[in-house]
Amino acid sequence: MLPLDSRCAITRAKLYDVTHDGTNEDKMLTRERRKLINIIIIIVLVTFSSSHSAVCVREREMGTINTSSIGAVHEKTNTPQPQPQPQPQHKQQPLDAGALFVLKSKGSWWHSGYHLTTSIVAPSLLSLPFAFASLGWIAGVLSLVIGAMVTFYSYNLLSLVLEHHAELGHRHLRFRDMAYDILGPRWSRYYVGPVQFMVCYGSVVGLSLLGGQCLKAIYVLRNPDGTMKLYEFVVIFGVLLLILAQIPSFHSLRHINLISLVLCLLYSACATSASIYIGNSSKGPHKNYSLSSNYETRIFGIFNSIAIIATTFGNGIIPEIQATLAPPVKGKMFKGLCVCYTVITVTFFSVTVSGYWAFGNESAGLILSNFIDHDGNPLVPRWFIVMTNVFTILQLSAVSVVYLQPTNEVLERTLADPKSNEFSARNVIPRVISRSISVILAITIAAMLPFFGDINAMIGAFGFLPLDFVLPVVFYNLTFKPSKKSTLFWLNSSIAVIFSMVGVIASVAAVRQISLDAKTYKLFANI
Image 1: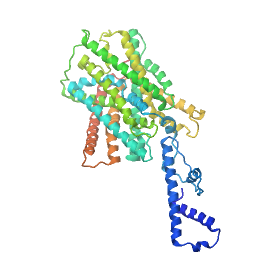
Image 2 (image 1 turned 135 degrees about the vertical axis):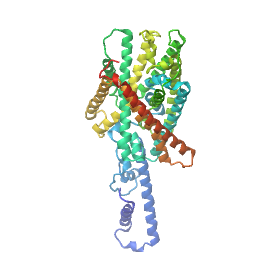
Image 3 (image 1 turned 90 degrees about the horizontal axis):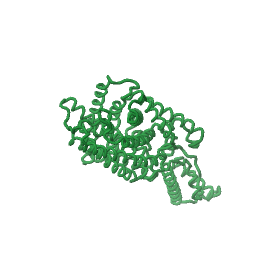
């Protein structure tokens, strides 16, 4: 776009040609009339430029960017103005294929609630009673309440920052985009982007392993002397994931994620009911809530449990979920978070309290394992255990696909052509091949490393804690710049410092756990 002074000169020259016909009448114009003409021209050009910018911003929010020149706007208003050639601007750059095809902005706040619930209320909540075993009742309940309050607060802050930038006409669709604008390109390229990818892809590997373990639990229950190995069940789960991974966009998962929401309520209700049943029966274990007498074990157990709770509340893809909302986005994410945290309150606390009450410090890493005694005898009806595992497996597949979206977005951005149709052969073939390779690699890692749960704890400490507890408050302080004397500034700063320290210590605890379990590590082990 030409500078404003140049456009004034061009328009003034045209007005001169039309009104004076090449005569010397311009000498008769007074200085006041010339000033008046200049003022009118400036007002007209500024008005049309503002209208054009507003249209571009609106179209950017809708996912389509119009790079038409100011002359196109003039044609729409039937005003005979010059049509200078447009100059490229940052806000008018077309969206890449990852944003166009994977992060479609078409959803409602209900849809964001489904996505949020699926990404947070996952089967990892079934490990919360195990976390309580190292914390005890008081510290455990307190940690769970603080985790819920801090993540609800930080996710809302992150949403407010995203809404603020959207109102300014620069909507962020990815976590790394936020980091690029707020922290700088190096933070985006070398920290936030890689950490988010590591967390999300690591979650896919861990969820695939858990899916295989649930399938094996059903198999062993039906056929105790069976010869199938764990890695074979991981591959079976991978086939289901391979099919679901081909769903083109995040928004396309809304119906699957609604089913996922129902499934998490179902298996949480099953786990709670079974724990209460076993806890009241004579078959249940002796309830022991004492903590370890070894000081070192207790301290590291506390921080490892905090890491488990933080990972359970972790999300890591709030900007990508908010990107699926149709503009205007203001207020929608808050409603979605309210839906999500209503489900969290119902599921997390019921499963954790009932599970720890029933099994105490014998709570297993996955509470479903406690439903079978040490001799392999079920403590609840077999069909009930099978049903609970089926609900869990189905929801695991939905959660895995959600955490594949950042990987899918990167692949789409790299391999797809945004100028071609989303379902053209040019885009479909690379999409199917790249996503299939991505899933096959995740399944291979899960099958080879059945001890990946220990590695995932370290990934959670390194990844979920900074992404979900630290960066949101930092982004808010840097964006809105609250007074350093205000309570809000110090609250956010305290959260950032405290959870940074917790993240470091939890990482050390996770590494220690890996070193303790290393002697049992074996490729393709049948755990």
